[in-house]
Image (cartoon, rainbow, N blue to C red; front, top):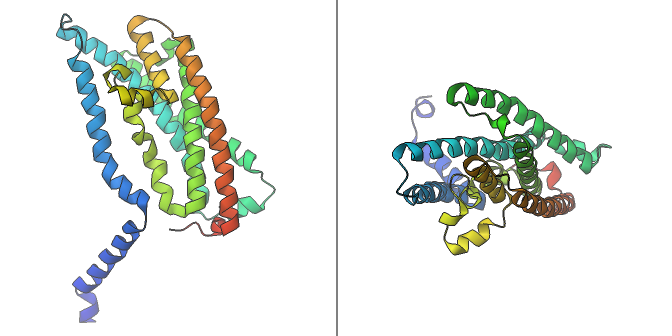
Length: 275
């Protein structure tokens, strides 16, 4: 009794060894440890570059006004993108956590019906979380997201399409690789955060990164948001380009999801959704 109840370095070491093996066997966990500091550094570094290169003729007050308006708008639009993907992924993960995904695949439910239900839940979860926040933004900061009018509709459509596309790809990866790929659902959006230019314009990026940024639909949305708030111009050209990219991305995401689902069926991982 005394040996089992006392603290054991041997048992502790055995558990540390177990977790080390688990970490070493999952590339997504290793990547998660490395890229979070890098994403934070790059994102806020570019924001600092943007603020440093604002025209010197502007006063400190005008700097603050510009930063406040675009920053609040960027934060709320980013929340649509992030929460839209998270709402899609969480509904899917609940089936994985309850080990119910195999039952669903054997039921009359079609994969397309599962996808549409996840999309509907994404909008529902987003509405529950976002609508109160928009009202608080009006109350606390005088920023009315609904005042963007048609621009808000175009921003929302493009951002939610991107979030669903990413949610589909990550859901397929979890089906194929198990919960070892679960971290991607929580962190992949932050991987594209610096390239999406949420808090600063594309022009502050190095030329080679600008090429990558313009391949992402959210980049066009956040550029359009800044044009609308700072210049009172609704850039329909940017919205059309973003929508075109989203159609391509969503089509690819559906194809990837079905391919990964088929692969999961062949190797039997639908019933083995553990680590």
